[in-house]
Length: 94
Image 1 (cartoon, rainbow, N blue to C red):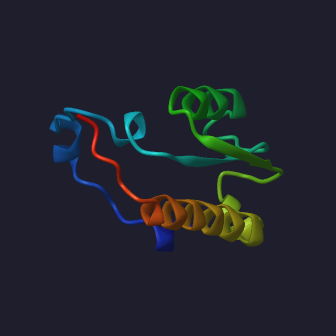
Image 2 (cartoon, rainbow, N blue to C red):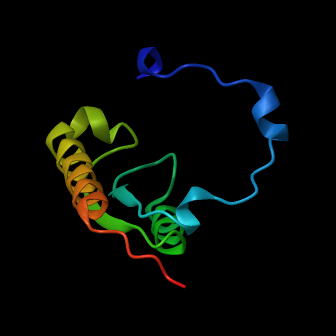
């Protein structure tokens, strides 16, 4: 798992976010029910707060290794939803 992650800079701690993306954009969350790093109740809280579409799978913190098909399925679901949403005609509201 360490090979797939890159170190992040300490300067990220001082960043300012004016509007979190999850407040205005759809999101999807894959809860790993056997995660010992981020407890499932914390994951449930975060996903609910963001209004995410949630899928739960039995897996550890490295769910992308233990459940790759579940990870691929939620990515595909999100991509299809985003594609169909962008294909909808945009109506100007006055």
